[in-house]
Amino acid sequence: MKREDIIQTINDFLVEEFEVETSVIQPNASLKQSLDLDSLDYVDLVVIIESNFGVKLEGKDFKDIHTFNDLYDSVEQKFHALV
Amino acid sequence: MRRVVITGMGIYSSLGKNLDEVKDALYQGKSGIVFSPERKEFGYRSALTGFVEKPDLTNILSRRQRISMAEESEYAFLATSEALRNARIPEDFFEKKAVGLLYGNDSVSQSVWESIETVREKKDTTLVGSGAIFKSMNSTVTMNLSTIYKIKGINMTISAACASGSHAIGLGFLLIKQGLQDTVICGGAQETNKYGMASFDGLGVFSDRENEPTKASRPFDKQRNGLVPGGGAGTIILESYSSALKRGAPILGEVIGYGFSSNGDHISTPNVDGPVCAMQMALKQAEMKPEEIHYINAHATSTPIGDANEAQAIDRIFGSNPYVSSTKSMTGHECWMAGTSEVVYSMLMAQHGFIAPNINLEEVDEAAKNLNLVKNTLNQNFDVFLSNSFGFGGTNSALIIKKLKH
Image (cartoon, rainbow over all chains, first blue to last red; front, side):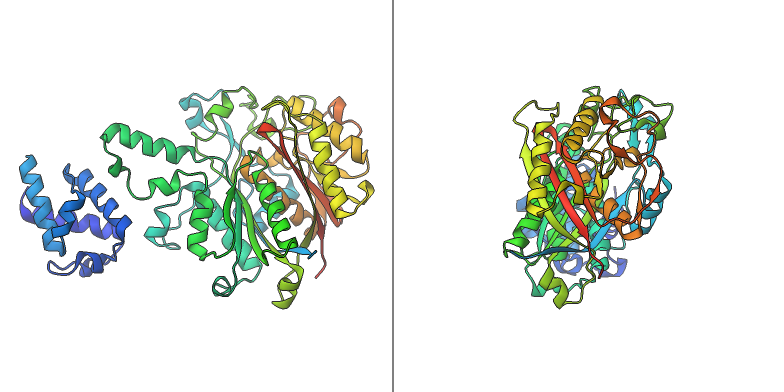
């Protein structure tokens, strides 16, 4: 899967899961603030990533995930490691 | 001791999605029972159930609020929204007052099943998602409603089998009477998915009259052969009389008696003495004589022994004086919710001057022959009614409520 496809998949399920406008998703914007995430929401983020890509982000992974770009990087890295 | 009044009601059941729809169904003697092919396929002995439409709260509550809610909470939210509107309680009321919340609920089967299945499949607990724990606890309804409405008073679920919703009202009544709360949201909720009632069906106590769904629930009838499960949610708003007067609230009725008892007997087979004790206690608290009760909404679920024993209990105290009917003939047994929904049904009858029929009562059972059973809709004004609710483990609750004309 190409990076563009990974980004598109993530953006699509973020819009659907967190019920936000597409426009709030900007590569360098804060994931937490843009999606208004609380601690429980991160659990759901892990669930939807797993169901879409078959990879699981751990709590420690989120220490380095601040922006949408960070999330794309992390998922891409894990996904390619898996395949 | 303070007076306790009802200032609002809400309902979401197989008879309708609001008070108006339900009032019409009650008057028409309409049944909410259907045959569910899904239940039959699942392995039910009797696949009859009250049909309750799945609510869609997408544009009403936020994602974070919805993700913790399974169907019992959704039903309860809709019933409570209607009750609060009806009671003219604005949103900022919850910021100013420590409003209480007591709701009856005694199962969350689908949520428990779904979360365990996910863990079994994925071998990873995280992947059940954040809502699973809040959906799969018995207190899910009060957990969700207290968060949505910013409840600051008492906040707990009452689990007392099929008397849960009645005890919730009774306990709210006592808290207000004692001066510990001014306003309490009381209710009962019942899931209607196929998982919730499977083990109950396994006891073989459900009516197997599957070819005639609307005729299957027939309390007090000689040919009754078991109950039919139903569900949804009902809510009533209890307030101290002074609080209701002060804010100019509609005052619909007054709770004047709450009697309770435990049979100290069999886990599922009801007896006569336990219910007698609860009804007598309610009468004593209401300072009323039996002849002052105009209508009894019986617990009668359409099981052979349960109806016969309740008929004996009612006969022992009240004789043939009060009108008696079981709205379960239309709704089926709404279990954890029934104690509240049947107060709502009875209040609707009192408000609109009729007694809903005990449908399917073709030949009265010998044990109930002395009761003044209402077979067809009766246009009859009445002011005071008693509502019975009994549950597994022998828990009994009897509420006496008086209509107020404000």
